Image: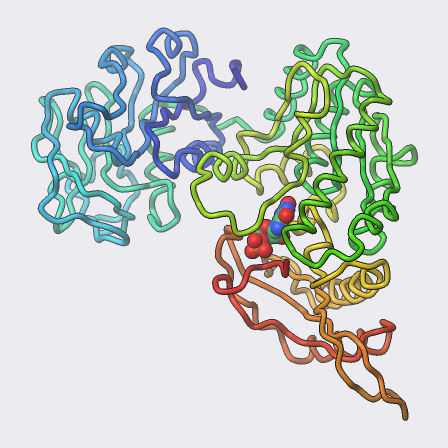
Length: 520
Ligand code: XMP
């Protein structure tokens, strides 16, 4: 169990009935300063008794409660004396299990919906405007309330958009208070957590850090731990957490594949290596030439990824043989990775290799994923808490195959140099202009196009660099960002003047879809 001591008498259990926003609910509760974790709906009443949460939240889910195959929990949960909040499917489940009726709604509601609060005295709506906006997504509705409940809010199409039975501390909302589209949703969740459950708001990220360190120490004992460090936020934070917990029992292997950004290998070594701040064994493998050799002549994007991924795994395999038997393998998996790999239904647009294949080649007892419950910005908070330098904590995402997917066509050492230098100038100027934090991702890529130019009195036939900058929140879709012309113009001048081999700079105005963020 992740945080037993934060849960007992203090925290909130989120019971997962298959909705999309389950971790988001736990995260919103943690934002209130109250510990929360998600558990499957099958968690038995016994386990809940043992955990002793201060409150339970039932999540949404895609099913209909009247379908016999739908996920249900035991009605004994309502006898525990622990307050329950049901959200969407969770609200219908409360109605269904306690004798109310749920049916297909005459009209389904989806998206922003006006809500009228009918019972302003209801604890859930304390401080919430009588007319507010909520995010709805349902085709079923509660058509008859269970005994002891009263409707506390309605919308045009949904007579029971919220209901409660304060005597038993049972609350239910048809809408999603956890999403930002419900502007007063955080207030409602806080009302449940603090007002109804009476939680103290004293949980902080530092508690997570202390708790994780203690747990990792206990679990690992005197075992040996291996971590594939990429220098990205997630693996760095996971590595530092482990280093705090077990020091030199941890070995971090950092493979420099020669496709990193300019000077990045040295920066990672500076932070984690012998001159850095942490107690751990740091192994840097300079495999640049090995990767360039393997990539020679390959132009197909998927083939490039495959080669990079496989070579990475081979190197890791060799290195782990040198280290000998390890007990634990650390992975910096964070919650969004869990969702992506969990769904796994969408078409493969690009295969992401990274360190996914490691478990097959390293002999170990167990995988440790200390960040599995956290969202990216929570991981960053943990990083700051652990004293990791800002530059690393706020690093923008960088793909595992690195510049290999930012060079169109064959990858050569010369092309890597060009894109590294151009990208360094781009990043420097974006930082100088103070635009960094406003962008989701930005980088220079090397088009495979060479064209005629003139420099001094000479004809040139050189490459075109493409500048990319996007706004995105989930990296599944993105809009091209509009950068100020003065900034673009300065970057262009610097790149063509300072980077040998480039005579044109283009700006990519395409969104995703139809383009992707990276180039290969
Ligand atoms: P695309 O190019 O698919 O990128 O729009 C979406 C996000 O994923 C990152 N990306 C990768 N990350 N291995 C990774 O670890 C990969 O092979 C890979 N390809 C794309 C990309 O940087 C963006 O953030």
